[in-house]
Image (cartoon, rainbow, N blue to C red; front, side, top):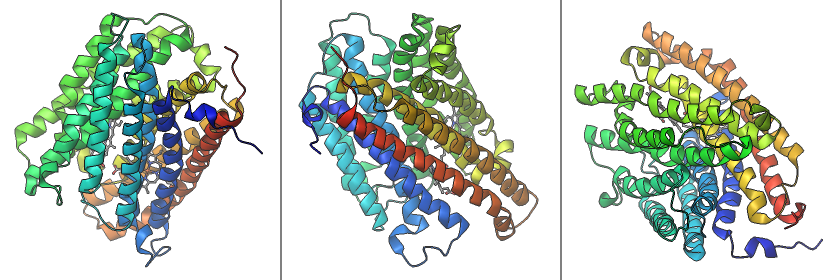
Length: 457
Ligand code: HEM
Ligand code: HEM
């Protein structure tokens, strides 16, 4: 069989292509790594003495791979396509984009290998070692420069809201990442004591709020009017949502430390702003759903639209749950247990992941000149990932409530652990559904490049 790769290597859209294909690869790799952790929580001795797949190593490899490799990568892939489109120009420099894409993916690869080999900085979402951090910063510097120069050479005077979010995400991450990873302290990559915890969670929540959230919102704003075939409900709301996101999200990292001895004013600010976050979220959702009003059939009749619509619903659920779980009296039951793991999965996979997948399938035909290889496979992937994730939400939330109540009533951890067995076992099988979905997606993406039906110009 002769495989024609010419189209893949043609320079136009190469940055987007690399990010989208690598995102699909990391989706499969990242979920597979999650499987090792899930097995460990059902049968802790299953992988005993095989150091590189022990829980403490695989867990951060899983979280960083899905967060950076899969979600961030796929969102950037769609973002670098969308940005020039809404500005009626080309990407400023395709080679610069390609260097950024390769550096970013190498960083995830080297980061994962070093985590599995036991080299970790031990701070959540900042586990990658110093050289990897530097590579990520370099990639984001290049992406920011490319995005800003693309804006400068635009032919469209109106800056549509998607461009605000794409440039914002890249710029904010370039500034925030070195701070959060304490880059000036090289090897430990950390300060000491409570100051370090405050810094870490300033970064830790912003990596979700100022990197993947704005990119997902940018893609949503691009796709909604196109799928609905209707103009955006309100330009004014879109800009209001952008500035309120920046205003409130930057202060909420303290809600991870409500049970820790940080200053009370910091806890109070973080709780108040956690609730204030409902404003930018509501603005975005009202704007999307009002644009789609009366035309939801356009979304439900196509699998890409469904991925997007469900992503927006998860966003609503996450951002009602989030403020509630920032309250100290709620955290007394929900903190440090599987409740939060449930929140993480519906947030990172349900909201940003679903929209990343929608964005990828939406953009792929435009950058490859080919239709998606199989719509049926997208539908199968959609159901597998959705059912797996719904299952995750139910089992992890239930497991968290059990843990929280046992601890609240003075029960010991070792008493609560056996109670979790049915939930952890169910989660394992639900995870397998998501994993199968991710491999089906990867196959579909590769086949689109190789055999997707050509779209006549
Ligand atoms: C792309 C899809 C996925 C994303 C975006 C994702 C994301 C995450 C995140 C952000 C965490 C950290 C949670 C926290 O500390 O609060 C996490 C932990 C975890 N994930 Fe995933 N995950 C995905 C798929 C999976 C799958 C398919 C499985 C199982 C087969 C899985 C199993 C786990 C396990 C076992 C943990 C550790 C939980 C713990 O520490 O108790 N994940 N994941
Ligand atoms: C209105 C918005 C949100 C609020 C107020 C909120 C609130 C919270 C709170 C209070 C926690 C800590 C819970 C605890 O440790 O007891 C948390 C954890 C988390 N949130 Fe959110 N959340 C919001 C939206 C999001 C979004 C949009 C994402 C992802 C795109 C996200 C991802 C996560 C993750 C991954 C964690 C786990 C962190 C860890 O590993 O401990 N959240 N959230």
